[in-house]
Image (tube, rainbow, N blue to C red; front, side, top):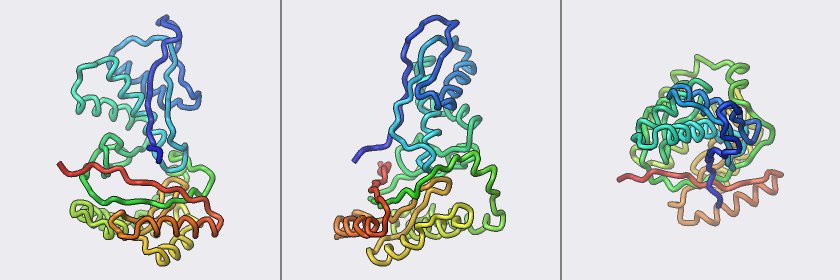
Length: 265
C-alpha cells in the first residue's frame, strides 16, 4: 500500500539571480508563491531554477494536496536559508506563509491533529492507537476548496452541534475509543450532507450495517467517502474484502486506506 506523500526540491537549471524561479508541475503556483514569499520574508536572495513538486496526492479530492505542496515548499525554503533552525521554528515559519495562501489542515504532526482550518493553528496533536482501515470511494469530479468555501455559505445554526461533536471527538481520541470516534465521524458526515452531498451515503449506510463498520467518514471539501473499520476487529480482513466486493457490485471503485498515527510515547 502506497503512502501519500509530498516532497519539494530545487533543480538548479540556471544559477543567474536574474533568472526566474519556475515550478513543475506548472499548475502548482501556490507552492511557488509559498517558496518565494517566504524567501522574501527571510530576506534571502532568489535564484534561477525549477521548484519541483514530487507528490502522489490526488488533487482536489479532499486529501489536502495544495496544503501539502505549500508546506513542503516552505519547509524547503527554511532548510536552505536557515539550515540549523530548530524544527519548531521551521514549522512556525512554514505555517506563517501557508495561512496567508489558503485555509488548510495542520499536516506537521505525524498523526491525527485538530486545527483551526482558517489559520492552520494547531489545537491538539493526538497520540492514538485506533488501527483504523478505511474502505473509501471517490465519487468523481473535483472540489476546489477556495471556491467551495466562497460559494457554499456556512450554516451558523449548526455551530453549536459541531462544537459539541468536537468535544466528544476530543474525548474519544484521548481515550483511544475508536468506535466512539467513528460514530462522531458518521454524525458529522450526515450533518454536512446538505452542503456537499455524497451520493454514496445511503449505500455506505447500508454496507455499514452489513459488514459491521464502526462508522462513515467523508471529505468535507472533497469527493471521498468511506467506511471505518479497525484492525482490532478479529475478522478485519474478511470484512474489508466483503465490503470492497459489495462496493464493486454497486458500481463503485473502492480503495483501502490506513490511518497514520503518532503513538503515545
